[in-house]
Structures are given as C-alpha cells and as structure tokens.
Length: 226
Image 1 (cartoon, rainbow, N blue to C red):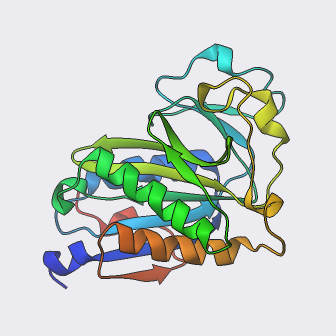
Image 2: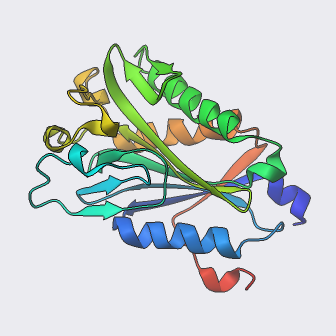
C-alpha cells in the first residue's frame, strides 16, 4: 500500500481498558516517530479512574480529588475526569497531510459526537466559546487536543454509562458548577460498544477518509521508522 492509500484509510484500534499514562506515552511516541507513510489512527478505549489536567490547568479547579490520581498532560484545556463507562477516542491524524487546520479538526470531532447522539434521538450542540458537546446546559463530551509536527493526538471523551460523581470533585473543564450528563441518563439499554461503532463511522466520514480498518492489536512502535 502506498502513502496515498494510507492517507485515505483510517486504522481504528479497539483497545478496551487501558491505563491513562501508558496510552499517553504511546501517543507521543507515535507522533514523534511517524512519517508521511504512516497511517492516521483512531484509538477507542476506556480508562480506569483518573483526573487529567491540561497545559492551561489551574490548581484551584481540583477541588477534592481524593483517591483518584491526577495526571498533568500536554493537551489543551483544563481538568477533566476519565473512568469506566466513558468512551475515549484518541485521534492521531496528520492534519497537515489532510489539509485541515486545528479548528477544522475540532469541528469535525464535535459534529461526529452530535451525529452519534442523534442516532439515539438525543439533540446536542457545540459551543463556540467552550469546546465540547452539550445536551441543554449539561456537558456530555469533552475535547482536548495537542498538535505537534503537523499531527494531532489526544481527542475526545464521551460520557456513555459511567459514575458521574467524580466530576463533582473538580470544576469540569475549568467551569465551576458545570453540570455533566451521560447517554445512559437520556436513553435506555445503551451499550458502549454500539456507541463506539457509531462514533468511528461518523469520525471516518467527517474527517474525509474513504474507509477504515479495525484491529484489536495494540500499537507496536517497533514497526515505525526511527
């Protein structure tokens, strides 16, 4: 397969439950070591409970983290929570090769979430001044990206069927009192695997790929150029 073919095919890795820091380190290494022949990738996974604090994060937004670890990371944004039942999607995209800007990528991600929720007749929207997706005034999905060497990593977190209590221990995304919601509070009989399947289809379409290939294999850095 040549590099042109690679640019039109998204590799989707369905990884299950993964420790946050290990996935973060792999994202950084992939971005540092990839070249023009490497495929763009979408990682779909869940994390054990963790708070992540973005580059602009302020300590006062961590109210009472308690026994949940806090990890300072290199994405944009403030503090958020990840835990089981939340669908996380990391987008390792050569945006320069795709002819997209960061705003284009954010818009495509937000619209993919909106279109996914619409399949369960849930009406949602994006806010120009506060990245993410909202149902009414409650936030259902958060975004945080990093772009380096013309390539993105990090991505989105969609609340599907999780414990929302940890969000009360922080000011989510830096907003005191921001209400959080999840898909299981809005519809019945929701399954995260089904949501994941719909989301990857919508991301593939809105990011302009011809198709995607799916694997459950974890990333092997030995296969990348040095």
